[in-house]
Image (cartoon, rainbow, N blue to C red):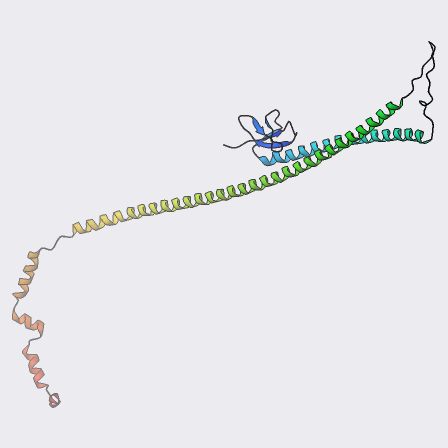
Length: 275
């Protein structure tokens, strides 16, 4: 069974990641470890490489958008800080000029009905404002530190994910190379088996042809044997008797026993024969 891979997004850290498709439709985040179910599938494929490339692109886009949003927030906070600083400087300048405070010599006067009453700022209100500005500064600094930590943590997680993806790609490449080697070996074995079968078939055909050729030769030999009549022993004995019953004259003629030849030899003897 071929495995299918799925491109999913974590609801807690919002990181895109690739997982093997399961029947339970549940997965565990590789970054934060949150267990969750499939909400939205961004891609399905039988090859994990394609999904990993898409996953990297989505993560990069998401990080860029988050960084832009964080930059906007930081700029807004910086503007607020500058405005607060300007107000604080103005207030300090007024105090440093040596202007006497209104509250030292202030005496409430009776106000007739219908007249406008101008509310004046009290000194404790100024102190409260200063405290609030200091608190706001501290809070802003804390928020900036938290934002920086988040950015650094996200960059680290991205690096780890990229390293994991590279390792997985290397493992997949090694597996593919092994499978290719196995396939090549199987092909070679199949060719060897086919060649061996062909050779066996050729040998069988040659043996059959030789048998077909030898059959008529054997038949001819058998026919020749049948045509030849066997020599009987009685005929052999008869021929032997006839040869023995011949005249001695004929034997002398055959074996050189004539008297004329003996006389000729005696006459031709010389002295040198006994030397």
